[in-house]
Image (cartoon, rainbow, N blue to C red; front, top):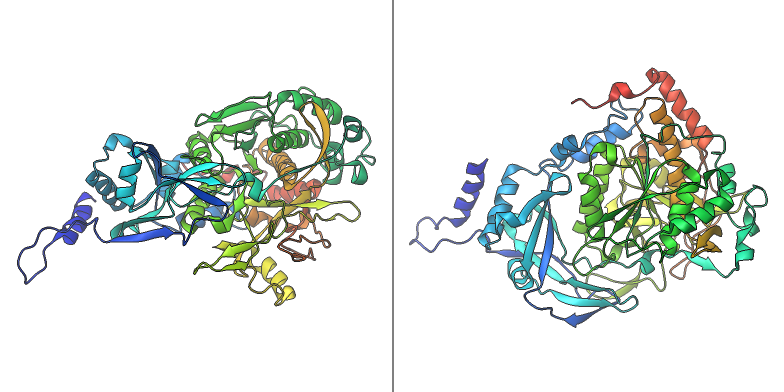
Length: 600
């Protein structure tokens, strides 16, 4: 393969035939813009240039040798109708699936070497199709990428990032490199995409009682006992706690409190007053339980209460979603993907996200593919869909020529087709859509075949309403929903009411973790990537939500209707029905899906 890479370089460097010999042209000439913003993204302002000696840690996403290989494999192991359903791949097998062509590695390495970046500064990471490059100075980065790195501050959060509004690559590399991080992805802080809302209350107001299910709902707020009753998990006790775990991802310097968890469980899940969690610190992520954050406290408390005594892992990843140097999603994924198969939780929930429009297409596609790697390894990845309906504020988005227009604001990573997105509901008899429930259609990801029929039906009934405000060909989200209004929780030793899909996602994750526990206890593989199952044979196990809406952007938003809708997705989970669906498949397949274990 080396000969082929060298032949490419030789061809690009050869003198023109029929003319006088000329100095050899470099293959790295002919720079072409890879991505550029027309202006500094909304809500960011420049603070000027950093010192040229400031160093950057880069991540280069290389294009896979077979770009469709991961999707093909993910569909096969995630489709209950396929013979390979449940045959999740090992870490090593996934690395083979996503590997770049050797010529790509050779060419990119030659390019970096041309700029005197030593091989000792370059390593493979993130499953085998990303390069990590350390120790690059700002002046080098500006020269190599045709960039102009500056410090930028977010006007609302004061987050400071080191970014460029454009970067370029030699044209020969465009078909080999998907994206480079950090470059033009400014990030969308937590406050822009999601924010759980604490309701004014006192310890007496919010404390309530744990014992009575019927008195623990609606105006009295949501408790674990109510959720377990509503979604029918009360009768199930986990059996495979030595082989199953649930993970919660935390960013932005957010930490949960074990003391708050203990008080919460003592009050609302009395058989689980010994519940705890382990903490994994990533890339220098800290942990200060004395300064608990609302988002992850809510995550941990409801995931634990739904799945107890399943082990829980909290991941503390350094940096904000618009951090100075590091990208927390990349850092978290780099750590988790590197773990051995037995050490990765079978279910992972995340309650962070930001607006797609501020994220480069190449960036979100590359990160989404990494979540797909986890699905291929048998991990169910869930994200909250956001708390601002179809969008926050005036929803004015700059167009290609810089003009502003109103657009609905989908949330990433909830829009990634390889994760399961969770919206919000409220009430009971009937359960209806919560007005805060984030939902809509991706501007970056096309709709996948697994949801084509469900989403097309909704769009046909919607007609031309909101034409121009969303992309009707985009991936529809959310996929599922759960209660989102007035969770009772403990924050800083006090009882409060809190609302947000940040409570919906861990609730659903807890239920999925119980289903994974059931499968593992039967000698079967876990569910893994959920969506093909949910939109297919799992659909009869869901409760359709048919009323309510998600207003935003000065509109009424979308409406919940029969079937899928961009407010509540396919609906809420009925654990007992889903357990029966799993049992039926296990009976038909022989007792378990262990026969579909991947070959070694």
